Image (cartoon, rainbow, N blue to C red; front, side, top):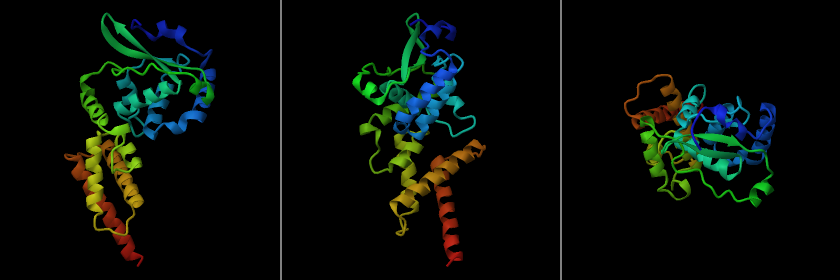
Length: 248
């Protein structure tokens, strides 16, 4: 498909107006919302917003969509957005059209489909996967491309010996190798706290990571993110210890 302005793709829309589009999205979410991680849902909702001007279609660049998630909420990475696209296509929610200018690939056209029940989706075969080159890369996303390569080295995208909830959150920002480093910080800081369960350690790691992200968004200068994360972990543990002492 030849690249161009969004107006030339209006014939791809499957909806009469935005209201009808929103109704179908609500039905899709009833069936499939639970299949997406929190980060993937942020990306999907952002794409939906960008598809409201022309009911159910958008040709926004991935980098634009990813950047937009960092405005008023915890943002996501490009790799998370691409995982969302693959799931949305697998479930039949979305169709992705590549566009080209001469022989060069341009950004895609995203077309939301009309709602189908789970049985209808399962009876159909969505064999055409979202292409490996989902959108035109740029220099800013070179690190993310490296992260994708690292992710592929883990079976089913699951990092062994790291709690799923923890890795799902941290992987929206960092590569699997870095996720391991963050979890190592949690293990080291709690290695002598025999009273803490694995669930408590996971919750602690998640709380501290969210605090680090908030601090970075507030403009804190951080030279080494792992050292900073370890420092915040110990501050949380010190505060918890003081509470225990005061209430003893």
